[in-house]
Length: 561
Image 1 (tube, rainbow, N blue to C red):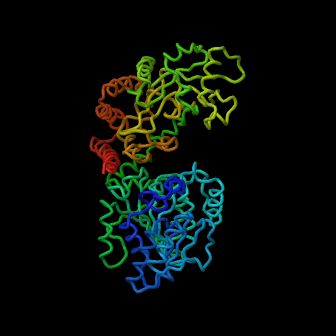
Image 2: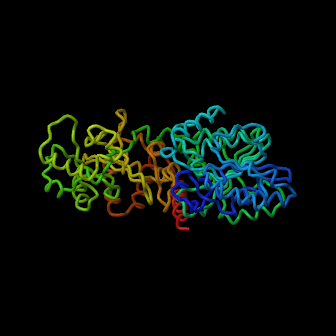
Image 3: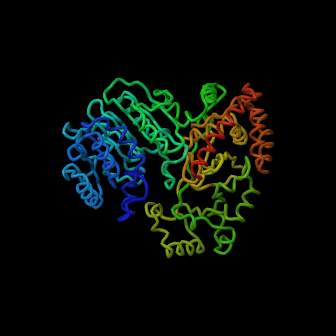
């Protein structure tokens, strides 16, 4: 993001590469209103894109009796966008073009001559794998110079926020559109800690209706004030929609009413996530208490969760039963594989399940060729077919030798779906098949006393279902995505139960889930695991189920809007 809404029409691909999307005027006006509080305030947009924050800042200063030409500053990396928008801003508000720099924001030194009273904007959002390595290194080094250690997995907005803070004068204010990742990504924790160390008060505004419906990325508004003042609090308010923002601008004062105090240390320490504060207080307290119990474990205490193998060309390396027959590929070069989460219908994936899934293309065979082995003619013919299709030119194939030898293939103990409409499925790998990175693969720790069927049964409770909603994160279309580290952070109850008692129970739940009775399976798991083993009441279980529904319905309804 550099400003949200459609990318600049003159060069959409370039804008996307720069993380540039344009912000609605309603949101810009609110952030500028909150950031500029007197006729003497100066303002900077460190990535001005289409100029919506600059225009809003000029209008705000004019209304207060200020001089926009002398008090408004902006930076833009894209030379074409800079030339177009700076000319327009000069014509509209007589802004000196020398106040609108065409350069990389990370090249700006936080000298007193550049520092302002308010930094307002929408930083570029470029995920780490597209974040230019040279720029990323410079950005992370700048953050490190300010005492903030960001990981290589950080998206571009994180160091951008850190550098923006350095451009503020004492008692200055930061008002920004940020991705919701600030409230759940592990790489964002140092940013939260730096906000806590830099400002007197920090407010997060979330919205039940997405601010930018066309984007898969979810967003919030950050309001940080009193740079250099002793830290007071993290505050949060969940609003219905962006239209509510105009109501604040009609009231006296700049304090956002109706906020709730967050546990700043828990949030910046990764012990809590912002999404937990969308739950009723009583439910949140119950969830916090349960997480502390000895009988409740993080999934990562029982198993390791990772990604499946990466072929570089799934259509080439995965073969149907019919293709195997036609190509006469020997079984010694094949491994049965499950390719899609839709093939996982119960708590166990069996050999019969694989046969059914193979008929619909959800499963098949992986072509697995060891290095330095003599290949039969049928395999050589198939590899020649792949070369004619330019498969060796695919990135993952190109960087390995030989190109046709897929690495890191192993037989996991279980699978975990990572993209789900309802809740991720934890499924024991009874068929002993392999899986690509369209599924997470699970290996049980050697010291874990439970088998995968038993762990799959523990996964069915309303406590775990709520934990999945808290630890995962929503994507476009209402899908829930859960990364391996997030999955390992989910909680399961009943890890102290005997494997023998859970195995039979797992078979019962497997039948219910296969027949589409997920809710009944959850109710049975709550009764047996949460109530009889953990000592919860039915009312407690109802609270957990309702909380999971609240978060699931929220992510689905937001994307429907």
